[in-house]
Length: 291
Ligand SMILES: [Zn+2]
Ligand SMILES: [Zn+2]
Image 1: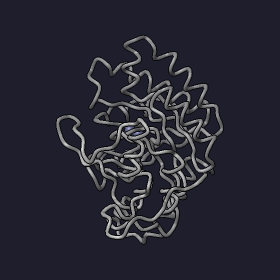
Image 2 (image 1 turned 60 degrees about the vertical axis):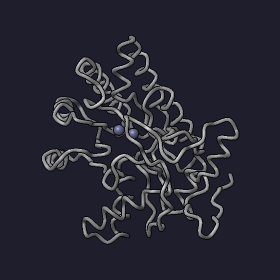
Image 3 (image 1 turned 180 degrees about the vertical axis):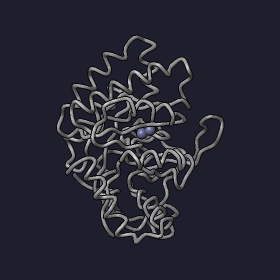
């Protein structure tokens, strides 16, 4: 497959941005019948800057993006998986874990992981989707499909599952807990890692983890707790995964931007960048296995 990483015009304010993420590519997509990606959009009443930053300098040791949604549109433009992977590889992000949130995106994750040697999959019903599905009586069927998908060798994690009290009100909490426990069971039975989505629900996530059989590897994706939860994770050998949110609030993200996050984390810890990358890579391999 051809990587579309042509260089850009000198003086261009988008110089260095991988072609697939550039506004001109987005206009081509718009001409093809897809809606173009505008500079900003309104979401929740606030304007958001949707422009992708230019590509960072490559990392000295290649790492893996542990949590991505290649199939999500943030704004209105679809970036092809092959383009996203090529842009990431060019800056030392050699692979990624594609994460499912519902049946459709989990099926996509399994397909992508089988299509691309540098993609592995995680499958699950996201807690917010679990609450919505339960309302229509469709949750059990969806979990059963996730259980089938999980059997694929390219699926290395069950996730993202957990609890989200930020977007789901109290009426949906019981369904989220039930779904979380079912996903835990699947992870244990099939020997997969667990990727937890925990938003404003630390106490209940920990309560459920403490009274359930657990898979060997448990990851809090996009860790949002404080020192207390970090201590609990460390005491129990659970991984904390830090995401782009350590450097931005709510801007669009992409695998090729991981070097920004990794450099920021290494600097904050006063760590040698190459050693830090090597440790991230070792952790990734420990949790998800070899590609
Ligand atoms: Zn996610
Ligand atoms: Zn999440």
